[in-house]
Length: 161
Image (cartoon, rainbow, N blue to C red; front, side, top):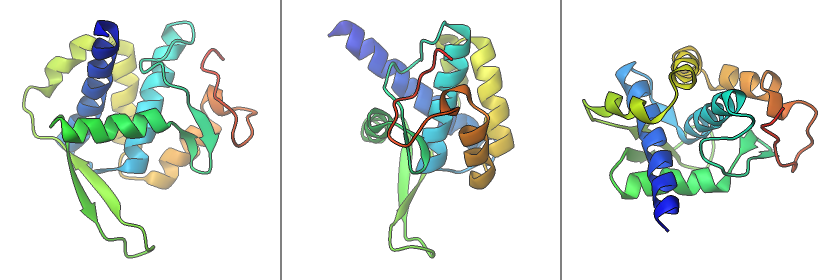
């Protein structure tokens, strides 16, 4: 139970770090973007740690690329526990509402201690580069990340590649 709680807090802290860092750079994250940045954090961590991800969650290739139900639940938990805030808005383009995430914590940068510096460096670069451009972020995730190479829809992603 204690290990599960520690892992859960680490994941919530990762989500908080991503949202706060994005907000700090005037980037507002939607659910799709936030999920993809958690995926990238897992990828960057796996590259340095023999395929082991931060979340230890199973990612699968679905319609919008890498997806993980456990990450969606963790985002909801992060909102419920006050790690981040969420605002639901009505979409102009579809019938489905969407969420925007925000974080207001001047001390969020202290969370850096929980993660490897090279992982955060790459993640910060990706957030700055793709944070306001969902199409470019999805292209990068779909076509330029190892776990997405040669997979079919429904496949579980292999981070050891």
